[in-house]
Length: 151
Image (cartoon, rainbow, N blue to C red; front, side, top):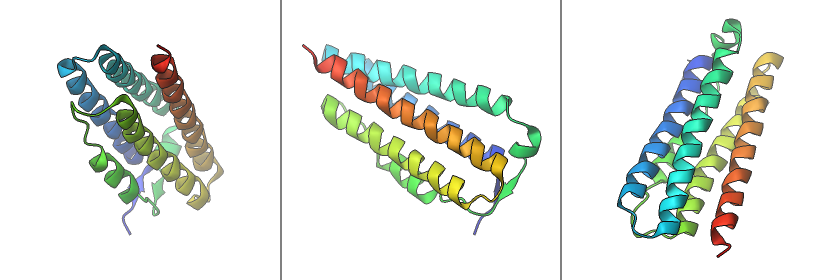
């Protein structure tokens, strides 16, 4: 079982968000449907902002917490979710959102597992806070799509 420091896990998660944002940016450049273009740009911008918030959160976290080694890191589910996101020009808004929400759900499950498997209260608090950030992120995506579908 691999071991990682908390800071490495957070950087890995930030890399996932960067990758998703880049995919969405690339998709929005070629999109001719205005609604889809707005959706992909909005979600890409949201991913960038979420990544920045995560970096600020990480910066404000004690070095002792960040340098803690963890043995339980179930990254396979997140890796497979990210690899499963193959956004393309022929996808509908609903399909794009479903892919993004599936990715977010994988992160939520990761945070749950890390919170449950970590015996240290400070680490549990960190991943619990990230869990809440991700849940808020998911709610905002849903509201965005609802707003775009109100034609």
